[in-house]
Length: 233
Image 1 (tube, rainbow, N blue to C red):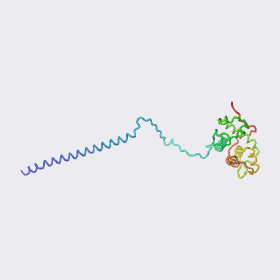
Image 2 (tube, helix red, strand yellow):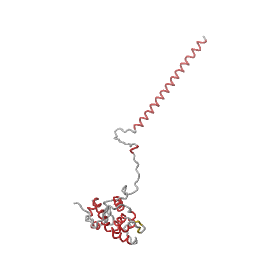
Image 3 (cartoon, rainbow, N blue to C red):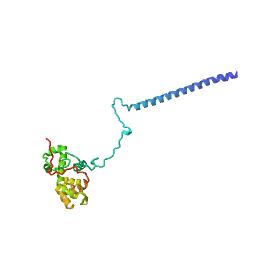
Image 4 (cartoon, rainbow, N blue to C red):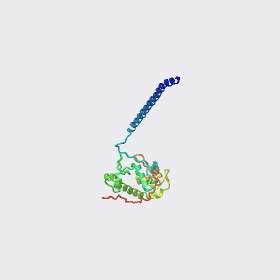
């Protein structure tokens, strides 16, 4: 009789404990589901901000073997070295930075900064056409340089390899100086041992050009007393 009373009084308490446990489990499951759903929604929302739907995109990523290291160039005449073309381009860059269309404040024209009277001497009489025609400018440079080489032929033979005014003389240096100052002034400079100098309106001297443009191969230029530009119709 005593045992029946104990069991009977324990069952309601046991049932209550079971119900409480299930309630707690249910609450925990609801909480977990809510939290999981919340994070999922937030993640989807954030991802949608970066949608590319409707956009036309193209990206190209090179392979390692396609990447070429680019190094700065160390000279204005690229890889032309001491060739005749290197000489021509270096001189053109010094005169005008290679600009065929430029006219400076003293009226000198184009890439090589020709005086109008100098152009007439080599057969070019239309400055406007000259400025618009790069091939004509290159032909004018070739003709003028050939003419200067003829005028200075004896001085080239006499002074190349010697030191004048502290500068070792080369043929290309003489021809560049003649472009700057005229062949007559270069003769005076060389024959005076550098005592009779010349500087242009910007203060550039014969000695500076002799040094800056030394050592180029100008053997390509043939001396020509009557060199003229041959104009095409």
